[in-house]
Each structure stands twice: as structure tokens, then as C-alpha cells.
Image (cartoon, rainbow over the protein chains, first blue to last red):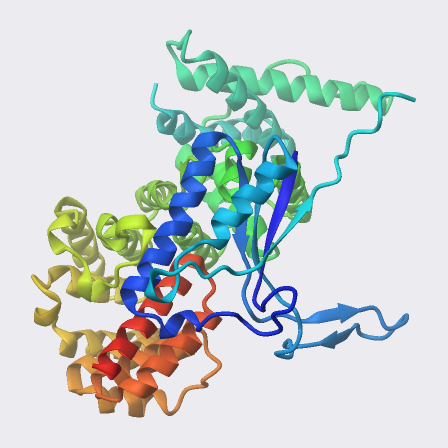
Length: 136
Length: 381
């Protein structure tokens, strides 16, 4: 079963802002330790056969919608600070929802200032499969 | 058999089919099919005459395709017999393929894909993997590109400038999947340099070799980016540097300077410095001035500001920046670098943080975040 682990720029439930100091204000060692943790995490999933893909997104972008025939699309952006932005994602292919939660918990334990887990919120969403039912 | 030897044959085989009367698009498809069969069967059963094998297999594919197309159209005028190959210089065929695949009517991504397939002899699957797109998407991109240039004749000489831009694009794409696009670009530039004695072709080849020579030292543990002044120079490939410098000197001797030769000259000066501190920045600034004279652009001016900052002091670099648009890519990173050298650590840390938010790649973003953290730590101590 495939799951999407979404990382947001802003916090999660009950945490309207980012819950931790911006990374450029950590020490270089703390920054390195954080990147190392993320790399090791992805490597371990690759070895387990659970890794599918991960991508990071730039902070700048825009919301866009159609605005009627013959008119240019309406855009809203660069994003206002208050909007909930997706920073990136990882897709995993695991045996159960429980395993997906366990991995998301590990990813959220990536070290931050003082080596403490940053405990950022991750959103975990199961993929809908493309396979039609075989029972009918 | 070395797959690059097989790849080397592809443009010549397309040329043979075209001279026998096939249109470029069909010839290219037929050779691609023959290539895939060759990759499949040659490891166990290598042919004695690889080129002859490919020509025969591709021609068969072409005739089959033409026959089924003509029977669909209910006509019987398809090419059936195998006409003798007209004698003609194969080098011209290959050179014209370079021109056609980099045709200015093609968007850059399409020109890259078509060049890698028709001139580079890569399979659609390999090209797709290297660009992280599905194979069907890449196949469509290539078909659309071929339709777009369907009316272009292979006989006309094209624009060498667009060919060089396409090859440099491929080079800068670096790695993707199993394919080393930088090495592929070097192979294609070598092949092109053997076909024409234009000094800019040699200039581009030299530039690629000089950049490639530093590759091992450019990334550290965990894939982190190591900037030029902190690279372990003992890991630079001295053979590639020597080759690049020799090719560059011959090109410069022709006295027809172009942007790639000027960029290669700058890369050669960096390669020549035993340590970052011993870099001849004064001469590098002079080469940037030469580069501006042949190819003025905001990006060149930005890079010149860095060199000027090192040659004449950070303030000189910052003054050169004043004329440039702060919205330029990498402007913040360059400004931060100069501010740090000028002793303004607060401005440098803020600049690196801004630059990290505007970075276009993960390694670059992580590197700039580290730089911000490093300068902020200096600031606090």
C-alpha cells in the first residue's frame, strides 16, 4: 500500500506557526545532523524496499484558477505567509497503515536545535489504488 | 562490447538510411528499433561488422514500416529493394544531424531529447530515466520534435551556436538515473570537434573537460555541495585538466574568441591554481571582460562581480553588483558571499538565508542553509 507523507512549511493541528526555529538560525553542526538524519532515513527505506519517491518544493509559487473564456487565469501569490504550504513529500510503499504511521513518526523525530527531535507534523495520506474491484 | 561504441555508430547509420531515400523521421525510428535489438542480442552474439549489422537491421525495419504504411494507404510504391548506399562522406551526415536535432524551431528540452537519441544513440527509455519522466512522455516529446522539423532538409548547414547550447545543456543536467549525461555530453562534443575545426567547438569541449575534472571534489559526504574554494584539489583529475588546457590553447591560437573559449579560459585559471588563495583573480577578471565583450549577460556580470571582489576587494565586487537586478538568480548568494568578505556578517547571514529560500535545487538549498548557519555562528561568537 502506498502512502504519501506530506511535509508542510507551517505547523499542524493546534500549531498555527512553524513549531521550531528556522534552520538558518541553527548551528552548522545541527544543520548537518538534520540533513544526515533525512538521508539515512531515505537510505534505510530504500534498503527495506519501502521507498518510492521524494521531492522537495520551492517556497515560491502561486494559486491559479480559470477566470472565464478569453481571460487570463487569476493568480494569487506569491503565497501569503498565512497560507498552508507544502514543502515536500515522500511516498512509501508499506504493508500497513500502522507501518506508515511508524515511519512518519521516525521522520518527524529528525533532530533540530540542541539535537532534540523537531517533532514537526507530517500529514499521512493513503493512495487510492487504480485497480477496479474484482468481486463484481 | 562497450555501449558507447555502439552509440557512436548511430548517427552514421541514420545518415546511410537517409541517403538511401528514407525521410529523417522514419530513418531515425528504424535505427532506434535496430539499436534496441542490438543492445539485446549483441552481448551474447556480437556481429563481426557492427555497422553493417545495424544498417541491415535498420533498413529492414524501415522497409517493413514503409510497406505497412503504404499498404494502409493502398499504394504499392514503397521502397522494396535495397539500393546501394551512395558514396558520400559520413562525417557530413553526422554533422548535419547535429544541426537538425538542435534546430532553432525546437524548444530546448525537445532538442536535447532528439540530440541524445539521434546523435547520441541512446534509447528512449534511457533518456526518459535521465530526465525523470515516463518513457511514453519522452517518446511523444521526440515524435513531436521530429514532426516539427519534418520539412527541414538535412542538406542545409545549420547554426553551430544552437548545437553548442544544446550540448552544454546536456552537460549541465549532470547525472540522472544510470546515465551520466555529463559524460555523454563530453562524448558528443568530442565527436563534434572531430567533425569541425570551429574554435568554439573546441572551446566548449575544453570547458566541459575542465569542469568535469573537478567533479569528484564537488560533492562531500551525504551529497553535500563543496564550493570551489573549499575543494580538495588533490582529487582533481589532472589528465582531464591537461587535455582541456591543450585543446583550449590550440583553439585560442586561432584568434577567433567566443564565449565558450572565454569561459574555458576562466575554468583553466581556476584549475591551474595550486590553492584557492593562489588563484590569479586579476587575470580571471580580464577574461570576464573578454567574455562580456563577446557575450554580455547579467549572469556573466554577476560572476564577474565575484571575481572582482576577490581581485580588488569585496567593496569593488559590491559596487559591481549595484548595477545588477537583485531578482537575478543567485544574486542573493553572490551578495552574501561579498558581504561576508567585507566583514558585514549580519547582512551575509540574512543574504544566505534569502538565497536558500530561492534555491532551485536541493543540494544548493542545503548548502546555502549551511552557509547561513555558519555565518550566523561567526556572528554570535
